[in-house]
Image (cartoon, rainbow, N blue to C red):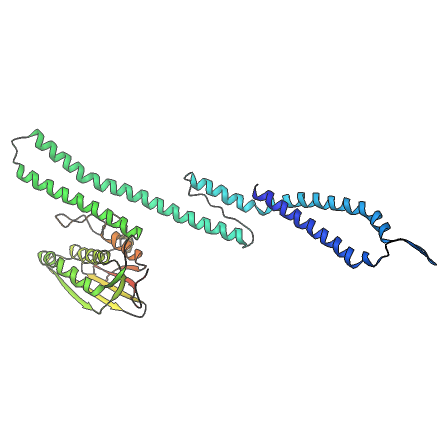
Length: 358
């Protein structure tokens, strides 16, 4: 049976139960005090209980039939009115299942349970639409970025096939660089997907130790580019994936080095702790960045400056991976441009207090 039919039968059933209870009350508290047989008094003839039952029995039966019909018809109408919002929600669900995520219920009326359900469903559709649009844009960007090294590889192979006498040493080196870039992009995409899905085990991690490890790893790159590295701060314990948080720290420091002033740039890495959170802050010198550019840096394949050349060009996913890792750890990422040039990136994560989060 449909919900509307069930509600209709429920309304009619409750109405009939109430009617029988009313008749039972009349019988128990009124008719039982009436004598069973009629009697004659000085004032005239007094009907008995049997006479009253014979007189009012058919009327009561017709009234009960009328109440049953009234309960069914009225219940069907009321159930239909009550279920109109549910029908609109069902229609929106079918539209969403068919791929139409732009439709909104926008239910009007009082703030009852149906209104709350419709508003929650609209909010869910808005989030799904934004996520699907982001995934489509990300897939298009990823396809474009992957197509570039593959196209270069194909061109180089065509050159080698058409010119067998050509010196293959430079060609092989160029193929190695292009292949390394494609591998780096693929690994970055896998890491970004892992962070988005939160498929990792949490343990206690000290951000200050991760900062030291990242600086030690990237020190040769900084020396090569003439960039000074500085680190200060406190012990900053949090709970999360050691590998992902190390990747986050390394990406921030690497980004600060490669997007810096040549020969005399600096990178400052610091950690701090308060009652609720620990913070990792990476500041670097560099070009002045417009606010609208800063706001797009965490989007995949976005770069604040022109595309770099060389082995450390990057794939445009560094800050996007950082943002996903911070979000997966229930943190907050803040990026601001420094007035004197460069930018300041702050990752705030929950502080480790009692035990690991399960």
